[in-house]
Length: 484
Image (cartoon, rainbow, N blue to C red):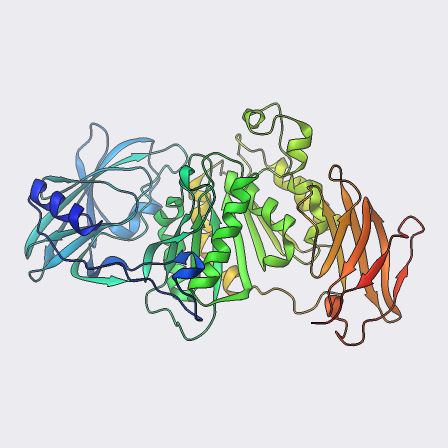
């Protein structure tokens, strides 16, 4: 049976003849004094603690079965099509279970010849002791061209835990569209006595919050480095505009309320639509992220392509083009990965952003991948290193210069420098730098006034330095806010 509500478990078990296991009530795990009143919860879920399947049998369309080590599955290129995966295991004791992991393109699942309701996420099925067979139908896409499963099929003792893959729930005004939920990976054995880094993954076009849960390379390194993973919903094929951007930020805020996360160690990444979304969101909110990684994401949308249905005008694209707010990435390390053979999002998209950052002296790494196109295999190649970057990245303790371009009315500053826009429409820009003789307004446009939070730019909160305007065009009011 699949572990859903107790009443649904009994119904499924009766109908399909699978052994019923009691699961109890969901247990919300909250840290640092958070409670249900916060509107966020990471409930316990069923998991299996036991031996992984070492090998699997694979049958290609119209082909014969062949046996391969499980660890070879994600590394073996395959032609797109429907494949059958068979795993044989032995459950050592009564009251055990089998867990089938999330896999890219996972379709029907059968345990001992009985079909299992293939809900999203890990499928936990109660079984008797003895030998068992698991059959999984997989649609290998042109994007993946491999069998991608987050972890091996396992059998063993059932347990309830918040570790591993679970679902974070939180308040969201767009709940009818499937928002208010995000996939979380809390590494087993994670040290709950200290704050941990958080890596937020934005899914690609036609993906879901479960997309990256099928990347074994990502989960394995998160376990090794004790990095918590958060995978919010893009609310469909949204290009992470509007509601989808706000949904990602709400998920991060909710995660901070239920798990002890280091707020200086939150990194953002994604592939394709998610890669573009990662740079867009991080550049709009640069003081929230320690690093950002984009796999073959657009940096300036081409409105002659499919995006026109979502971005109907140059103004709509300008609101989400990362290249148009590149000034905001002064203190944000950026890593771009792009296949040289990409025909969906040409490599020029990453070249433009890398060139713009280098021209400004900003930190950017750009990996050109020879022989790769728009490919999940390229993501898998670098996935463990994305986790490593997140494990070691931290927001700077002090920034002495802030450049910030606002292209939307809701974007009003970063790093303790805030603006009041002159008008709701158009761009607003500010360049503020602290020097030995005071804080200099280097440049500004489209702003009515500038505010400096106490302690911003590394200034002593109780002795704010004087403010000097270097630009005759930047003669707007500017003042320090009172120290709290």
